Image (cartoon, rainbow, N blue to C red; front, top):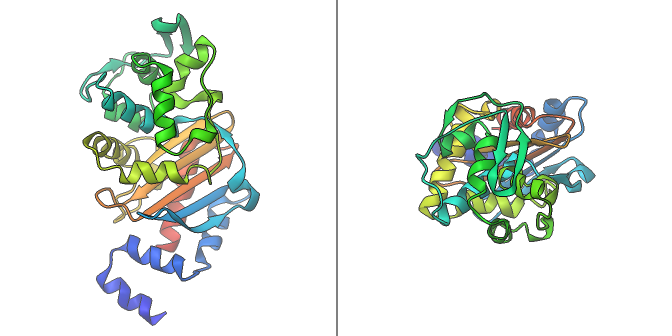
Length: 275
């Protein structure tokens, strides 16, 4: 391993990690086992910009499909920005009960504060459903479906049919989206590498999610991780990439019976153990 020591002198931590994993460092499996404890879960590491999977942990769990969650908020934010129906600085007050007037539906958002003002970046960082329920109603669901296709998720999504599905779709996809950790690889690659100014903004919000929001458990010194938690229908998910400016490494974590924040903590423990 002398070459790794020499490599460390000239390369950032995330590049060293990529080299170790490509060389077959078994520390990854041990780190995943320790971070997950008695829980079953999947962890995937990929190299960017190619999107090649470097390491996969969890066996069949990496192919198990989970219903939508807040990991799709970055996609919704990107769509809203690209379609010009929202400005990043526009604020809305969060609410535990949200009336989505377009669909005449009231949705419970019980984990939010009443009256907290959030803009788009903070709505992503703190995973505000109520913000996306209201803002998402500005676009027809068919437009969001177009973006799901662009992000490599066409086989994982169906059109929302009921008023409730249409209202919830922009915030987390609900039961209209079913994807495995493996299915999320092209999605994460698009989030990490899309060069538009809109996606640069979204990546900044995902960085905020790791430094100040729901993904703080994944924050690793020196890695500039950008991430997004998701929790819905009994599974915790976390997706992330690093560094912010020129991503070279991605991570996907899926854990049944966990929260998104717990999945982020597992990601952080794995990355710390093998960096």
